[in-house]
Image (cartoon, rainbow, N blue to C red; front, side, top):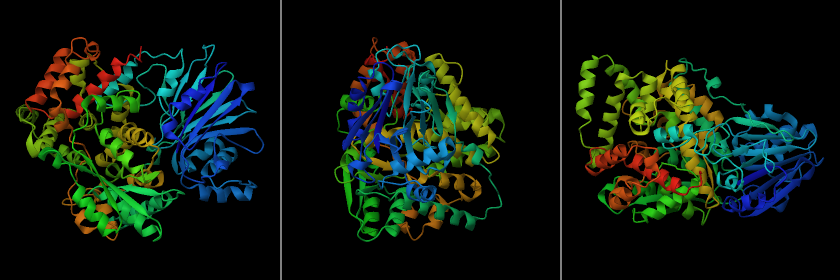
Length: 633
C-alpha cells in the first residue's frame, strides 16, 4: 500500500514536494523516476507489505527498460497470475505483486485488468509508445486523482493518490465545481469524475485513462461494469446460495491474508467482522497471530447505545485471539476534529464515522500494518433497513394517496429523540418518499437533502449526473428491488463514502485496510442471487448466518443489525455553541451557497430534537471549514 504521483511538463521539480505531502501513505521507501525525453516524472512512497526487500521498491521497471510502473494497492491473486506468466518466459527477480502486475500488463494490456483481484491504482509508462496507462480497481477501494491542462506551459498532466499534492500545481483551476457541490449537498460526499475543484478529476472505479504524453488528453474509459455482470436467476436454491456465498467468501478472505507483515481485524459485535475473523482463524495456521481491535463508546447513555464492545470481547475470547479496546467518549476537541477531517480529505466529507475510524487506525497501526474490515457486507447481503423498506413500499403504495399523504404530514411532527430516534427518523423518511417512483424514493433514503430541499436550501432545481445515474441504475434492475438497491449502493455509497473514509483514515497512519466482502468474484456471485434468499423474516443476513454457523459464534448470529456510527448527536449537543458559531456567522462562506433560513431551521430542528439531523449538520460544518481555507479560489 502506497502513494503514487506523476507530472508531465517542463517543470517537474515539485514532484518531490507532492510525494512529501503523502509520506504517511508510504514511510518505508520512496523514489522518483525521471524520463526527460518525455518531459515526465513518476514517483512513489512505499508501505512495504509484500516482499519487504529494497528490490521491490518503486517506481519499478521492466528488464528491457521500456516500461515503468508506480502502483498503489495489492493484487491479491498475484501468485495465481504469476503461474500463468511463467510459461510465457517471464523471469521474476522479486516475490512482489508489483512485478507480477507489471508483466501482466505487458502481456495483456487493458484486456487483463478484469482478471486482477485486488485494490489498486497505478500508472504504467510506455517509453516506446510515449503513453501512460492509469487505472483504478473495479470497486474503487483505492483512489486516483488527476489534472489535465494541455495549454499549460509548465504542467500539462499530473496525477496523485490524494487531492492535496495536486494543489501544489500553480496554474490548476481551483474554482468550485457546481456538480460536486450539488452532490455533496445531497449525499455529503462527491462522486467521480468530479471533485470540489474544477481542475481536479477523480478517476472512476473500474476505469482507465490512456494518455498520449506528448499531447495529453484525459478521457475516462470503463473497463469493468458490474451492471453487465448481472444475470440474476430465480432458479438458484437457498442451499445453492449458501454454498455460493461461503465458497467465494472463504476464498476472498484467504487471498487477503497474504502478507509479510502482521495483520489485525476490526472487530465489532456484528456479523460481518465476525465472519471475517472466523474465516481467518479457520484458514490461518496456529503460529499466525491475529489481533483484533474494537471501538468502545462511552461518556453518556446516548453514546452507550452505539457500543458493541462487550459483544466483540466475547467474540475475541470465543476465537482465542487478543482484543484491544479503543475508547471514544466524544470529549475530543470540536474544532480540532473538524480540522482533522478537512486535512484528511482535502475537501469536505460528511460521514462522521471517519472521526472514529481515524482513531481506530491510529491505534491499530501501532502493532499491525494490515487490517481486515467488514465494509460491503451489508450491501451484498441485504443488511440495511432501507432494503427491507423496499418490500414495505410496494405494499403501502396500494393505499390511497390522500391517506399516505396525511400520514406523512402527521409523522413529520414526531420528535426524533431517545432510543427510538433512529426508527422514528426512518419512518418519517419512508413516508415522505411514498409519492415518488420507487427508484427516486430509494435514492432519497440515502440522502440528506431531497430534490425539494435542495431547491429550498441551495437553489438547485435538478439532479446531477451522479444522482440521475443512480436512479437509472435502480430502474434497470427494478424487477428485483432489493438487488437493484444493492447494485446502486455498490456503485455509489461504497466507493465514494465507505472507501474514501477507509483509505484516508487508514493510510494517514500507514495502515493498509483490506475488504474481503469487496472481491469482484464474490460480489458478482451474490448480486445474482435472488433477494428472496437475502431477506427472510426474523433473520439478519440469513445467507451468511446459515452458511457460517461454524465460523460465527451463535450469540453473534442472533444479534439484530446495529449501525457502526459514532455518537454524533451527543457530540454536537455538547458543542452546540461552537456549531452555531460556525454555521450561523453572517460572514460564513456557506451562507453564500445555502440560505441562512435553511441553516437556522436545521439547527432549530436539532435543538428541539424534532429531527436528529446531526450527520447533516456535521457535513455542513466540514463544508464551511473547508470553504474557509480559501484553497478553492
